Length: 66
Image (cartoon, rainbow, N blue to C red):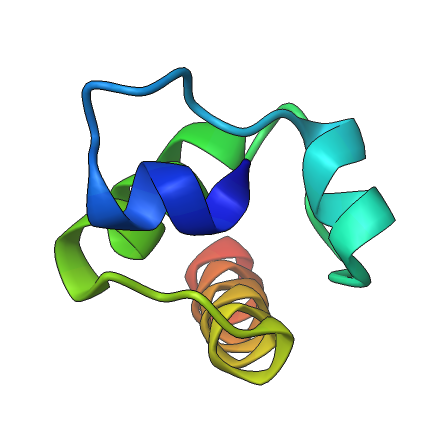
């Protein structure tokens, strides 16, 4: 599902559980829309690529909260 969405954003957007099943951690309802936007815009199709974005977003959110 994630690969399909990354290559064709007219397909249903992945859910939190889709990412968990794929092996990506750190996604929840608070960051799902942003992760889906990045998967779409960057055509991310690998666990490593998506996990890098998730980790980077978490760092940015942590700094913004300080």
